Amino acid sequence: MAELNIAGPNIVGLSIDRVTKRFGEHTAVDELSLEINPGEFVALLGPSGCGKTTMLRMLAGFETVNEGTIQLANRTLASADTHVPPEQRNMAMVFQSYALWPHMSVADNVGYPVKLRGLRGTAYQQKVQQALALVELDAYADRMPQALSGGQRQRVALARCLVSDPSVVLLDEPLANLDRHLRATMEHSFRDFHQRTGATLVYVTHDQTEAMALADKIAVMKAGKLVQWGAPETLYRQPRTAWVAGFIGQGSQLMVAAGHPGKRLESAALMRGLNAIESERSQSVLVRPEHIQISTTLSSSVAPTHSQLAAQVEGVIFRGERYELTLRLPSGETLLAYHHSAPDLGSQVAVSLEQGWCLEPDQ
Image 1 (cartoon, one colour):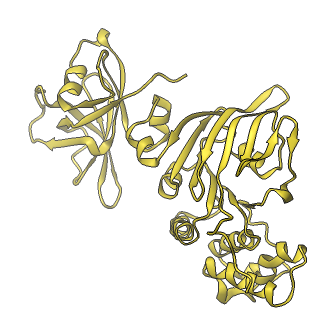
Image 2 (image 1 turned 180 degrees about the vertical axis):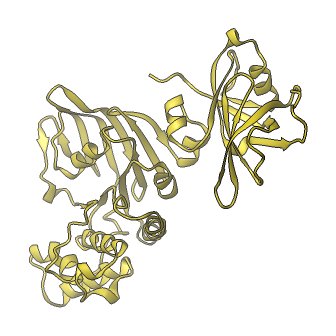
Image 3 (image 1 turned 45 degrees about the horizontal axis):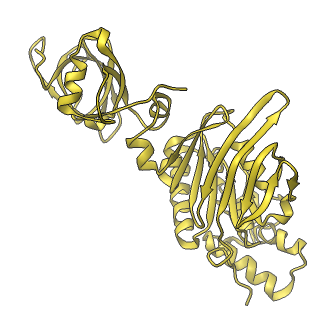
């Protein structure tokens, strides 16, 4: 029986070492290095034009490398003088547009890559059935692509990748064309697929919530450079720079007195830094909304203490499970906070900050 080997010895590590790609005078990817372990789900995350799709295309072999090397299981795929063509890399790519043949059934679309390699008969049928079963579409084999939902089409595209037993699956913003509800559903499908197959996945997206929900590790890119690399929890709790802090998750950046020995500021140290005179406040600190406690009051003003700040409510947004508040501090700085109820606009509240994270200046 012809079996898919996606979770077997076919899964190998991927090494990207100081890879650079230039288009004329423009450097799209600038000395990027990553070590992707076998079976990892890695997201390349960044705004439009940061070089993430160019990096994915170099992995696939659709673009050449100007400098650096790309290796798969110690085999050099790309360098300044080496370029293994896409069909010899044992990688598969899922495109944003699905790229399905409209005149072919689901089964024929999925089986097309192995049919080109000469596979026929029972072995071919088994390969197709197993690939469709992995994405839970085995009951849709005879349908045409136009009869499927957007999420189902995306899963057909994924099954077509898997049928050829790739070492790495590359995904270029695969959920970008789906509505919010369907994206959430497909996030569950991708997580389930990764858990069942153990495939090595490299996933390009500009959506930080998508990357945080799916990936084992995230490479945050800006202007062609890697600015931070790590687990989602690390990027959220310990962003390196002000730019990463603003790009990953929600939060407020406040200025405090410099000279703190550690990166994390607990409540007392944070409040001392905030209460320093303005000329001494040169260190940027990130405070996440969940680390802000709010006490409402009926009085027209709140006197600050060593553990609290006065703040005025400037915005209230209902998010279903909570309210999102915009608060103005006496310094003029704003705080984004969560609360279980909606205080009146313009009212005064007392704010306690549980902790903050010191940020490095942006390069």
